[in-house]
Image (cartoon, rainbow, N blue to C red):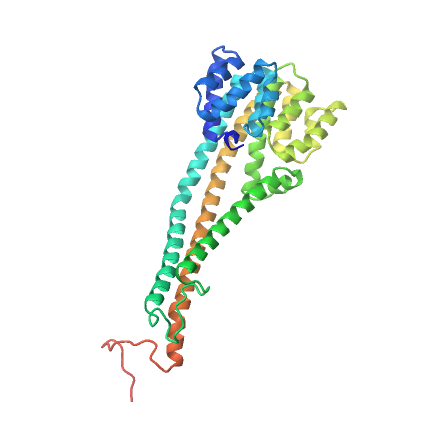
Length: 372
């Protein structure tokens, strides 16, 4: 599946923009994908060709995209389904384009923030590996050199790593630690994305929780705004809107809300039965439902949560880059102290134990000499 992996953010932006232009100009959906299959970028050509064939065979858009679920992210599939059901696909593509553009900007800002700490980290790793290699080469070329005062080989880190083998071992340790950290992050992302209870716990985490909730609320409001203006049943609209959040906690609450609406309860009362909606949003829904202005309210709330999400994502970005900078600084400082302790202090202590002067200070007229 290497050639059919998930589309990158840049490819998704190109896809949303191309579909928005084509569909707004009156082009049929299958013709738009046929055009992308011929003239799009290589990743888009492969995905669009498959969709074009399925659409010509009579499949709906969401069914065709579900067949390529490994190519299109869940959020794109959910909102594209909303656009197809409501006939607002160009508008949906415009909203998705803005969302992915914001994600791209945040990713670039994050990479810019952590680039210098990462340069320092890899430079420190290479310097330490070079020190281990050079000290080992010195000892091989001249056994009397590169040793402490008690005749032991100088081990800069105190880990028994010397020479070429030690340098390679050190680099392998660093690579293994980085790979383990990457796997832990991917595992946490995988687990939290599939267990609603963990998602609810994440909502309580400072900085991260409000950001995740604002993103989910923004998507829900966008989907509701597009569907409440159509003849779609409210139960189906609620189901699709909760799916569009791409958040396990919200999607797990959808059956409860649907069941409440089927029993004849209002939308605001049904939302109140779950603990995932902010109080301000439930109050706004209650007022809008009484006045018959739910679509307008959803439009205002979508804009509000979009601003909140972008602001909180920027804050989260800064926290993440600061955390990485602290990890790099901790690694460099630890390495410096290990080298200082192993190479300098140990020799100083050995010299003191042998009765040799550990440190000589030249005579100075500013320092009074001790009396007889």
